Image (tube, rainbow, N blue to C red; front, side, top):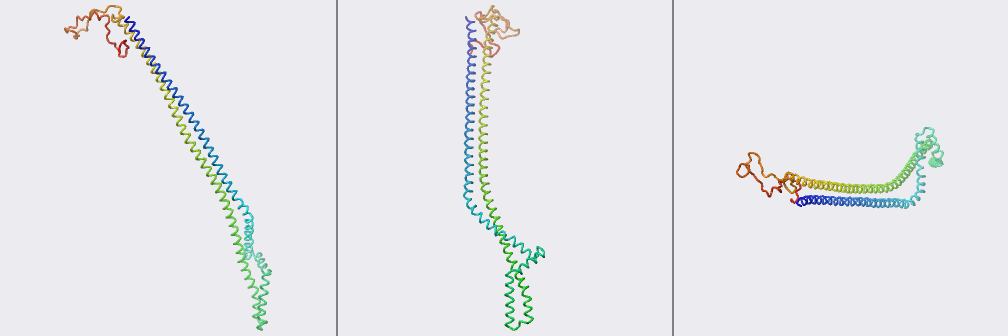
Length: 340
């Protein structure tokens, strides 16, 4: 009966310890599975929120871009009437600007820049002009009338005055015409400059508006890309953290299984050690499994003086203890039924 109780106690203790370790491992595995499932749900939700945010930002970008383009089109539409009105005005200004080129060419001819033949033709043109002839006739008549009134019509001074009058008038008219041609050249040049400036301003204004619109759209695109990049980096960090949690949970579950297996092995080892220990004691004649009588006397090592009398001999154990004496186990972790 005592032997059965001892063995039963050892077996029950080992089984209970093994089952407790197994339950703890399963509970930890279940917790790790729940943790992994929660991490998967969190990752999926992060991705869903990122997709929603990205779609909304793209929608806002498209709306802003369309609005910028509409504003540009509206501005150009408001400017179109002025552009249409400016067409005829530009044509008129162009006619004035075309005056400068012929005037400049005639100036060059009068000064001889285009050669002697062109210069002679330009002077002859002045001499043949009605204005020159009228001035010459009026001048000569005035000289003759003055001479007739004074009685010097046949005098040498009158002849000299008449011979000098035509060249002087021609030179004066050449100078006068050159000055007038210079004014026309300057006027034509100014009108050409005005046309160029107006065209440049119109092109600059239109291109500035287009560049501003393009710049605004480009900046919005850059902002969108930066926002999406930041959100993507944050989502990647979150997913990485969730995968780290999953990995840690898996490591914890594996550690729990290892601890459970170790506990089961220790329990079985404890049972086997206890049974073996009791069997060994029985073979020596001690304990409930004793198969022979325990020795009646004990012979200590020579020189041992730890017993009464100091001789170390004649020790007789108590008869009542000879069949149940159990010295302490040699291994500290050996399982002893009924022990603490």
